[in-house]
Image (cartoon, rainbow, N blue to C red; front, top):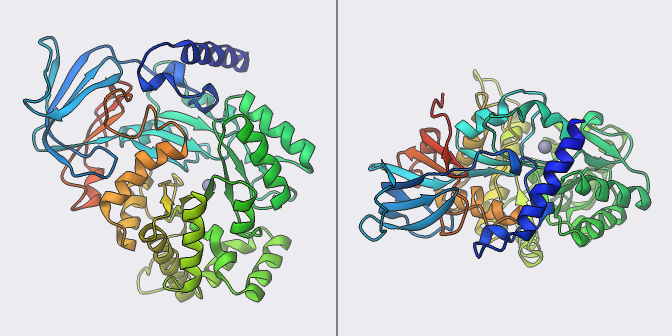
Length: 438
Ligand SMILES: [Zn+2]
């Protein structure tokens, strides 16, 4: 019954979007790229002027000091300096002098993992949109209660995998191309705005998944372990999740095949085995440069998710293989970024070294620790993710016509990325959410 209701809401909403004749960019997004809760999010009705803040717009340009952003309803109506933007007399003025205003953060790799309330907590920490690349739509029913403030939920449905699955509860198993076509179409019909393929899928079936999804305008992303990344990208992938997915490509062929066979026989071999192959990979190496050039040429998005792989020396004890392996993962991530690969930020939501709800900020910090410029981190977190989701016509930056998803923080994240933890206020769709952030 709930599913039927969702279905009806979804198509009503889709109808609104496609039939909307507004000249604003927000009318352009295809219905199949919508967040599943689009029709449930509170729509702002007020005229609000946020004045005095430093604006970091998400496009990577120079920040605007003493900025003014005017919000009318749920959209950004004007952006400029205080004094340049004409503020209507009925506007609610929010004095944000001394604060920094950014586009809402977008999380390309969020897992709910039965953690009720986690999406709402992420929203309070500035994450206004998440993509879950592998969960049944129903898993989110408990988060979508009327009136609950949750981010825009971009779901993919269960990831497509082959037996034996690594995560049976989050997987949909396919055996041949007919089953792949059927599964992809059905998930898009149910509201999936992306498709995720898991590591047992061979390239010829990834190709079928990509062709089917692309016919509907939907992007496909992958977690790889036993398929080489370039072969998978040739099959049509739009994005790759996890820096570790490039392990086979960056490892000498004989060692790569050893790892591949071990994971093939035992899914769990990858958990420690990945550090063993990564400790011998070099970031400053012609192999890494040629892979970067390839990724740039193909326009592939890379979501490294460093957080789940982080390993630290604790109480003087350390597994040096893991320390070295993680160090190389960071170095290759930075190298990709320097070489111009389309980097996007995903938190993996629950990770070893972040308190519950702060994985997104930890991922940002890990990028900066790796050597990536904070300005590039913010672009990856906002506008580049919007492009990855194919919703950059309405989300991802502070620009006129975009939806008003905004975060006000204290401090300058370009000097100290951890300032993104100092959340002052979060706006979703033109409406402030509960400002109790801790
Ligand atoms: Zn994941």
